[in-house]
Length: 329
Image (cartoon, rainbow, N blue to C red; front, top):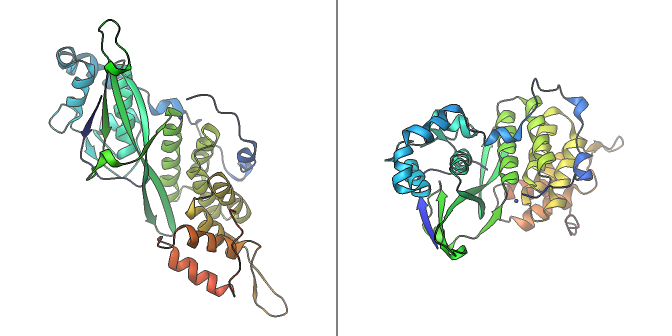
């Protein structure tokens, strides 16, 4: 039995077994090019409860939780008329404690906060990725993509012999939709949500011009969950902004290998390879790197109406006559 709760907000930009190290992913890192962070990145801090959060559950809403139960009590507290009064804020991706203190966050931050509170109350928490809901955002010459996640809370009924049919599930989603029930979703893990948080932090730091710290956050996301392919694209943007063009190309290529349908990976690869082109000393013409045109053509094939489609077509024209696309086959 599933009941949908919609808490209005606007979309921001952009699974739990142990994951073995991905050697090809590890090969993308070049730590010597960057200064170490003052403190290590702690993924578990993303969901950690602060003392104010603990006091809130133990005192501020304790009576409501006892009367309504932990699931409904928390849901009502999350609503606009409840005690938390969350507001949407796209400025930065916050962890649970930061979002609680600010009473605000982007969609991912609010999902993290909700999950942290729910887990403290003993509720079952599952995360869902909403398929097809990806948003592009620009910051100068940087383009970022991210997906959308929501959280499912459930509380097992205490009746003897209760089975899964006795689970009352509530979908908490901070993105309005005209027909949310029709959207396709897939279950994703806490590990992946932490990687999404790390990737968002990397993208935000890069947009601020902090290339050094952005590298470490992107690196941490890949180490934690090498199957979350969006971070390879972010790592490529970090390297390119740092002036490491070959490393950037390798990261973008990895994003397309990990997800052959990731259109922007091909576009970023093509653009990066153009930046690596050499000049023919005899003719003065540009000698593109192998695979440049194929990468751009693959982008157009996957996203003919994409935000970079016209730019990709223009770049293809400058590279000469059409050739058969082989990248990503």
